[in-house]
Image (cartoon, rainbow, N blue to C red; front, side):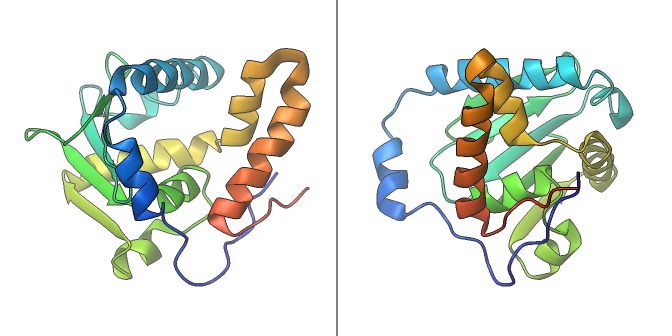
Length: 176
């Protein structure tokens, strides 16, 4: 299965009023859900973090249109949700949520996003490139990963997630 390219132009962002409404929500439930989701992805793709080479790397991921950020640690594998990224991370990546999701699924070119200033990268570039290569090699399909959580309802859930993802990223998935 290959990914289609996105429509030209910037991807949509989370509306500021929605981001403002999300600000007071507690982060722990989000951290528990996303941490469990990361563990499931790693179980289904056991070599994903092994490919990093930066076994102790800590990455900050900042969706520019949301009032929180993520810290992803390679060893031991862990995801934390924070209001602000702390100093001392190996690398930080920032972009809109739609661009970050599209990057994870290989739907956009990270170099093009960086040169168009829709993607910010700070810190250890070697660590970021290793992360990018590990994600590219894994060929993640977030809709399929999410759908796998729903057992017998997985197929309708996958279609719903794909529809939501495609609306957010402005693209549809090619079937091969």
